[in-house]
Amino acid sequence: MGMTGKERLTALLSGKDVDRIPVLSVCQYVTYGLMEKTGAYWPEAHYDGEKMARLSAGGAEILHLDAVRVPYCQTVEAEIYGSAIKDGGRTHLPSIAKPAFSLGEEPRIPENFTAKGRIPAVLDAIRRLKQTVGAETLVMGSLVGPFSVAANIIGVSALLKASLRKPEQLVPYFEAAEKTAEQYAQAIIDAGADAIVIEDMMASLDMISPKTYQAMAAPYEKQLIDFIGGRVPVIIHICGKLDQVMKDVAATGAAAISVESAVDIPAAKEEFRQAGITTPILGAVHPIDVLLEGSREDVREAVQQSVAAGVDAISPDCAIAPDTPLENLLELTKAAAELDL
Amino acid sequence: MADKDILSELKQSILDFDEDAALELAQESLAQGIDPVEAVGVLADGLNELGVKFERMEVFLPEIMLASDAFKNALSVLEPEIKKKNTEGKKAIPIVIGTVQGDIHQVGKDMVATFLATAGFEVYDLGVDVAPSRFLEEAKRLGAKVIAAASLMSTTRPVQKDLIDFLEAKGVRDQFIVLVGGGVVTQEWADQIAADGYGQDAIATVNLAKRLLHVA
Image 1 (cartoon, rainbow over the protein chains, first blue to last red):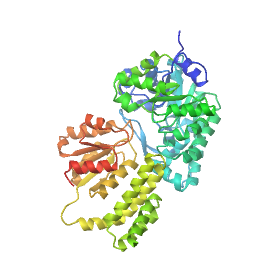
Image 2 (image 1 turned 120 degrees about the vertical axis):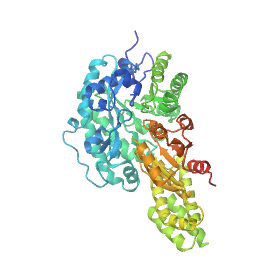
Image 3 (image 1 turned 30 degrees about the vertical axis):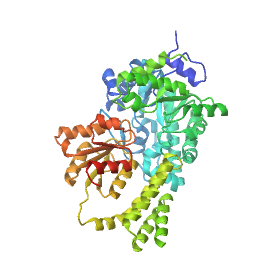
Image 4 (image 1 turned 60 degrees about the horizontal axis):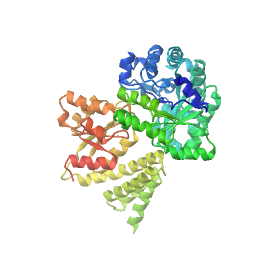
């Protein structure tokens, strides 16, 4: 008998041996195909815990991933802060229509943060997933990193420009976003999640310099991970070519780092080895070139390449496009399961 | 000699992403009788130099955004002068541009819009989160033959196809040249959705537009 997905990922995230390479999608994995198979659809599944759980459970029941996750989008926190959200309907994810604050305004922390907006639905979904697929599958609650929440509540352009010109003006937003992330993380742990994903997509070197990452993103990621304090493992996901900051990301204390194929993974592994860092690196199958547009053979090859590059678990680079063919996602798990370590 | 100095200072204002200096130096260059086309040329050189550094990860997006603001500032005084010179003879070709519905990424699209404007097109920037119906309405209203649609997210790329399908459904597809671009877009995708062209970056998009519209 091999390990269950949950045992496999739990082992990986605590530095133990695994029976084969784990496979998961650290970021969102819902597709139109998965909606049809589960009968739970966007946009309802963003708001209703039962539908959210049913759709996410498809990650285990249909895609055979080792982990499931909720929610799908990155707007939950910003909505509670007062950013206007544009619904994505059946086919797209919700997005930020208008940020809550203008730079210079005081970022008020909403009271009873975790009772507001879609957080109760996310928590409900976590509890349901623990019941339905949680015996064998790792249940992950995902929240947005403080730097990225700040971007979602004051606007990406405003944040990026201020990061060069008036960095001190950003501090109150980072501090507020870190505080509410602690509350949200606590609620996710209380709901019974096995792991927490921190998606800090704006903390990417596609957006900011290594210096800005070190000064404005990493400290708050670390503070949040310190708060979680190992009660559940934390997987941190940051997009883009992170080579220059991989050691800084590891220093946040995350149990694993999820990266894109843009990162030179062999170089990062070597850098880690020399520094005595053992943090696993998860990745790195391209969601567009391979999963969306590639053939099943391409998927198989990308899985093999990722393993050859040294990843410790297979995961897509970032969010999967919702029109990704189901057979490619099935091939992802199949190819990983068939690999000899 | 004075010309050279102000032009190199103008370029430096872009490299320093200094909005105020860019504006002042653009005004100064006009006062000195420098050809505004030449002034825009050195500004574009500055942006290109930063672009190369950006590729090498020596400068990052915030610097590019501020440099782009500086460029726009300078352009706001130079462009009217260029237009004055261009009024006789050829009329500028209108283009509508925007980031597709559900996507709020602005920077790359702004860059393309800016380069198209400097290349002499009449650019109407519809902003971000633009619905297919709005692309069509605005293109009709402005008499634009070209629609440029950007997508920067794997989750919003299908909206470029929605736009083309929408034009088909309205029976007007053949009246417009649809250009697609953005970080997640590829030539393969453009071919698959039967877009008229794929612009890999701002400069490639300008060249593409010129080629498709048969302008020099």
